[in-house]
Image (cartoon, rainbow, N blue to C red):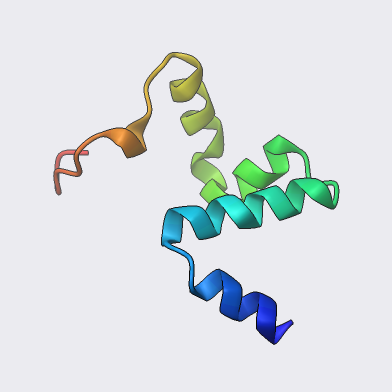
Length: 66
């Protein structure tokens, strides 16, 4: 388990999260469960935004505005 943690720690944050999500899917988590685990109560809102082509995490971060 420690070696897995070390491998994950060595990855950039976005790649690390993608790897964790991939592993969760491999052991049977649904896409919905993975999204819920990652985004919490915001998951349904983010899912609707992405269905409409709006990807909030691709936008420039402007503190206090988004």
